[in-house]
Amino acid sequence: MKLIVASDPDGGIGYNNKLPWSNLQGDLPRFKKLTSGKIVVMGRNTWDSLPVKPLPNRANYVVTSKPYSLPYKPGLYGIADLATLSHFNDNACIIGGARLINTAWHLITSVNLSRTFTKYTCDTFIDLLQLPKEFSLTYDEVNTDHTYEIWNRK
Image (cartoon, rainbow, N blue to C red):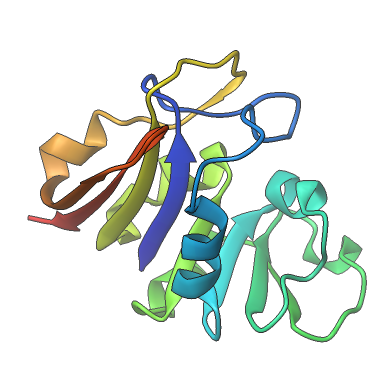
């Protein structure tokens, strides 16, 4: 499975269940291109934070302890545990949040990371120390406000 995530230099990915930055140049079009037609997997807080639900042209899987509490919507599926995720392949992308990412590192085969140059006020973090331990940097692109990195499992 792929992880597609944006963070600040300290691994901050959210504040008050929202992105701490307003926009990263080119990041949203890249996200759409990487996830269109694929499975996106997210935690319940990420689902709750989406402005459009479900994300169009994707199968939306929400990992939650109460999958039955999700509304019925075409393209939306609730799953209760990570064991289900082990059946997905690189057609699936984890898109957040921190709790899901930090417990699913062992399932992730590659990471698409947009890393801001600026530190933001965050209350939600991922463990960026996992990257050099378990992954190799295979692509690095410098943009005006962030780097875009691709990491593949060693």
